Amino acid sequence: MKFPKLLLAIGLSFGVTAAAADPNFWQHEWPDTDFENTSITSWIEIMSGGPPKDGIPALSDPSFISVALENRIGASEPVITVEIEGETPRAYPIRYLTWHEIVNDQIGDVPVAVTFCPLCNSGITFDRRIPQGVLSFGVSGKLRNSDMVMYDHQTESWWQQAIGEAIVGDLNGTKLTSLPTWMESWEEFSTRNPDALVMDEPRFNRAYGSNPYRGYDSSTRPFLYSGENPPHGISPLARVVRVNDQAWPLERLRETPEITENGITISWRAGQASALDAGNISKSRDVGSIRVKDASGKDLPHDVMFAFAFHAFWPEGNWMLGG
Image (cartoon, rainbow, N blue to C red; front, side):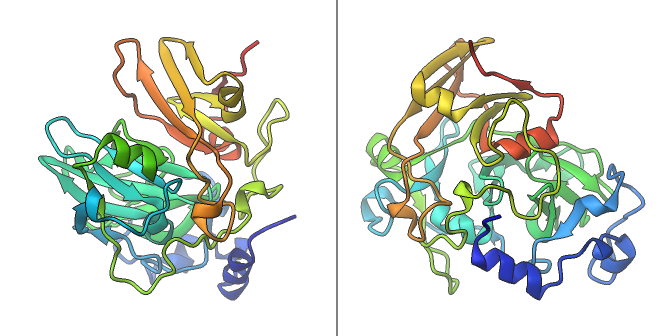
């Protein structure tokens, strides 16, 4: 079983064990979290990813520079593109999100959380507004099905990043609204939006541009995941395009770069590097970029995640295999 050395070291140094899967064990770190209010049926599903609460520092109120001034990002490096009507488009480079996982930002009137879970390759942007008010998010250091568990600073409820739903605490069961954003190469974004903004390099001592999960997306088994493999013989770490509870294998898109099914059009274009392959993201293999639109041509919320994560969170989901 092949895992990145860094992840193995983290897991060993922090003693990742099933015995720690007990709210009483976590209460000293989370005194304000209501563990009685939860949708979790078995606490063994929750595991430590290694770093403690805020050990991976989420970002808030990031700085931006113009596309014209950016000279650090490689052409093929992935960015999460956020285009809100009436506002200047913004790019959030994965070279930074790999090390911070969450960016709390405000675009016009819309407070957003741009999120990336490296272990699931899941990049989703959420509207931070809920009926009770505006939330901001941090990284809990916990994983469920190898997916990041976020927490909100206001109630310290825990949130599952892949599904955008609170799973522990006062806000248990509350859902965030996903926004229609997407991952693409820096070259694609900057060429289409020469007058746009890109998040500037954070002021942390991190090896930005490097990939601490080297070789992860060619591993045979996900890290800290004990669930079932996907059906249909699909590799656990194969990428799929998820729209609601449907998943299209990325390999199918490579063979047929545009597919229209169930009122959804998905297109694939070469040029985006994997964030989880080589030690230097810009030198990683090409996995391509995805756009998802409805029948009117409007962008739809979606995710490009690993197959094991889709199966874990949508066990009854629809696999769009074609043929």
